[in-house]
Amino acid sequence: MKRLWASLLAACLLLSLAACGGGEEDVETAWTPLQMARAILASQEAPPGMTELLPGDGTYEIYVADSYGLNPEDVADGAILAAGGASAQEIAVLRLTEQADSDGAADALRAYLEARTGDFTGYLPEEAALLEDGAVVARGDWLALLVCGDTAAAEEAFSACFTQAPPAEETAPQESAQPPAPDPTPTPTPTPVPAETEAPAPVPTATAPAVVPTPVPTAPPAEPWSYDEARLLAAWERGDWSGLAEEDRAILDVCAQVIADVVPADGSDYEKELAVHDWMVAHGSYDSNTLSQLPDFRENPNNDNPYGFLVDGKGICLGYASTFQLFMDLLGIQCITVEGTAHGGTSDHAWNQVCLDGDWYCVDVTWDDPTTYGTVSERTAHRYFNVTSGFLRDTDHQWEASGIPEAEDTAYAWRQR
Image (tube, rainbow, N blue to C red):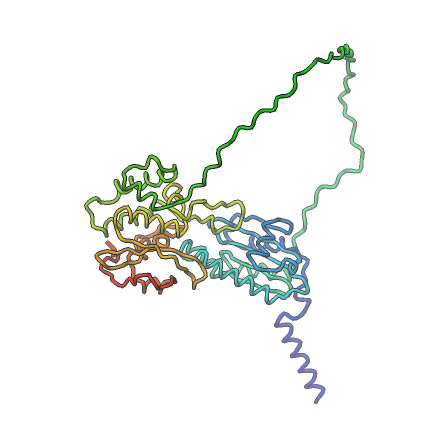
């Protein structure tokens, strides 16, 4: 009886280990990381165009070390497929070395997934949802990062790589061992060309000594342009910005046209504020290239100031906030810019507050202008217009409260027309 119980106990232990994936036979596979990544991508109904990053590529090394936070010496092989730009879709398959801490590596990928979710939150809601549904799957020494439209199908495709044979490699056609057949076309006999008469050697002539030119002093390089709102406000007050830099003049030219054509001259401060807000939502868009880690996607160098937003139509949150601030200052409406965070304090963010009839209101133009695959409704485009501080706290905004007025009034909150 004791032997029977011992046999049953041993069998249970073996079943338990197999269920936990502890058997080495469960993680053996002949697939390469690139084959796995391609199979996962093929499991998606509408796979996007992806850039393949492999060991030896500089961007691959940046992903592994800087983005994923892994020690490159712990990664024996891998393949990364990244869409880049406005798409967060990404598939990575990594094979760790025997000495690597697989649990720690999986935790690092989950931390990366959480950070990427914060980067897209509020700006590209569909992509943020993909990241929230993303997964990190571990199988022995193998790790897979899955950010795609159908996570369940991606996980099934990854698991299948350990139970099915890899795809047959395409082989180049073998060369024939027979010598090539002779060309039936007769080769023409070349016609002899008479040798040219040798030219007489040139007679050396005396040359004047070389004249060394006197170096001409060059002017020092001009200082690169940088945004300064005070400089623009002073020129606006003077009514003359002819002496400003080209970038400054371009900013004020757009502002003057918007104020003349869009902002009601006899409107209230609220009506002027709303006109500017709605024009900004219609005019610009978030610079999604700043979210890409691929070198092919270059962010606008002025996306954090009004030049990038007004002239190039691209901005990040600080570009939206500084543009809104400039308009309010030009119109004489009291306004401040708040620099805080979002996504639980993990992502930098900026927005504004305006004072109307002595009461403060919060305005987040960036999050009122999300990049989506459909039409933004009027309600969505005003969700963060003239709201309270409490509303911002409830919608994932964080900031240092000292020195920032509390917005509590709702008299000028936006209402559906």
